[in-house]
Length: 431
Image 1: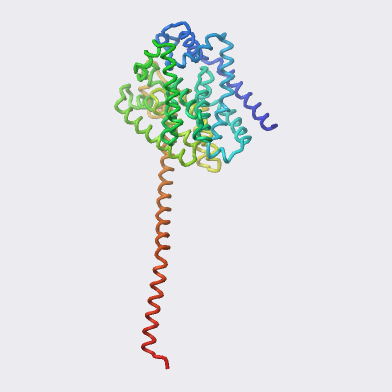
Image 2: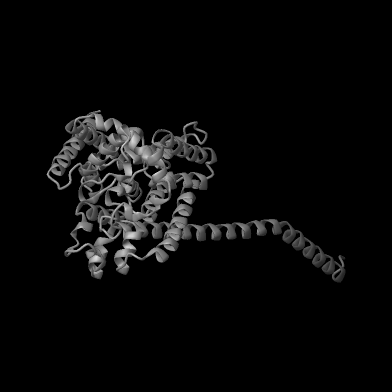
């Protein structure tokens, strides 16, 4: 209890310092104000998707999210900011803890040990650029991460849990990115949980059509598939495969390249996550699925990468005895603390990110490169494991064949010995 108290106190101090530092930032609580305005719009019948905010921003979430944001519009501005900031600070160690309650760490780490690691990790992770900007803007990504992880913990404990998949469906109804976890449930043959996730998501759409039919019709008329309505895809804050391709190729017309690339990355990521899940490595499966969903989403702002922060803790625990693994985690953490994607010197102009040098592109696409690297390493490990398994099976088959053949060899040897003895006895008859 004493150790838990010290770690919790240290985390609160670190998180409070981070929150105070973000108050002076430009556009502090900008997204939170959009959430509150969206909630007020659905309450008063104002067309949700015609609203325009500072910096040309719009409400880009599904209408179901605006219904959930309605209570924010009743709160005074300061009260809303304090409430959301406190909830965000509380949610980060919760997501870290839940990641360690997935196999295999749920069996290897006690609850106390997992809680201590979660608090210690969160004290440092709150300063990572995704977490820092999530706190700065008043974003909701850490809450969506908690929903996904809690759902996966339920499913891993009991594959027939009656609520398994429901929280993933709700998270996808609020923001589409977590929907890939429903595909993961299907790929790991958790059919009931996958069906529950799909049904819950469908329920969120139906609720929106029932309560705000005009906004629902406007959002689900496929206009949500156009990433340009969310923001500039070339913006360095967009750490998705689409954004990286636009910056690398120097053009916004990357659809013919992006679609097959996203399909390949998505297919490979889900296959690797499903393989890990079936092998009892659910924590690794979560990490792979989170990274994959962020890569293939058309828009993945840097604060969306909060979804992958628990994956960093999973990697840290898994690599604890590996110098190379710890070095890789350290490099990723330093890049996050230094906010390397914002270190790119951009000139003026709306399309400045389309004219970066090769060195600048490495910094501008840092999260995407890390995400692709994670998938490549996972694929390499899977390939090596498959080769070892095939070699082991071949040796086992050979040994089995030898064992089956051994009685026949013994019988043949006995028969040869008998014939030799008979020949000798006929040649040298006993006196």
